[in-house]
Image (cartoon, rainbow, N blue to C red; front, side):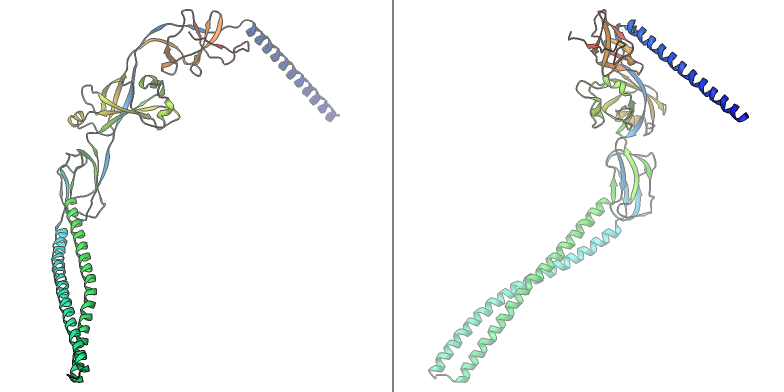
Length: 431
């Protein structure tokens, strides 16, 4: 009995809950229909009256100094370090073409002297071989003439033997004499074949010695390392008396006359920094280019504290590291004279930068939420129309656009792709 009662009570609770849920669903749907009908019948829009004025183009931000030209100074030869520039310390300034490091060249000079002695000996040997070649040529010439005479003598001897005016022994003597002279000529010709190889080998050895001497000459010149430009040293890796080998790292440095102040610029400011009619913001993500609408700039140094206001030269505008934000990076080249007169300004220095452009004339301020795909919706003569616009500047909440509106135009505060009555706004005809 108790079990049946429990089942009955559970079924009653389920039925009541289901009925309550259906009632609430029906009531909510009815209210929604009533509201929709009410908005369709009596639509209302929040609008803003258009007023134009002059807008000052100014943007303030902070920038950090970076070295635009870094260098890793390495050794070209091996030896003992015998000289370091007096400013060869971290933060030391070394002028262009000044000797930074000198490496001992005694070992190289001894090698050079040894090679010079070898070169002199080889040249004497070359001279001797060339003289032998000349002597051999003379000997071959004499041997050929002597052989020809012996040949003529042998011919006469054979003739005289036939005439029986000489003995057989005399003829054989002439023949032996001819064969000996022929053998001598053959030996001389064989020697002639070997001499070109000898002279070629000597010449190759001389050439190798000259190459080594030139390398030593270059190494001696490279043993003095000069500053390729006016540089500041950031880190040293050697001391006097230390032995170095080729490609040993000597110091880290940067061009003291080429420092850039890098400032991150929001994409909302890009419209007055670049000519967006010719270059799109997407182009910036793929290439660096010079700023077309160069603003004035005023620099106020924060770290280090340097008195006075400074200016810099705009060199390029490039994409920032984070492409999702589509922010830009403005590179400002600091004046070399300023850098040399203010030694405290180094990579990592921090400054406040004010970018000042030409005032935007006849600009209109409207909420950014009223813009979609560079279009706004306006009410003109009781009709809702879409109008293309050109954004001059934006700060996120508000955007400034060129005033190309009529006197009685009002702008919808929020862009609607589909209007309340289900229609779409028509485009404004050409004015």
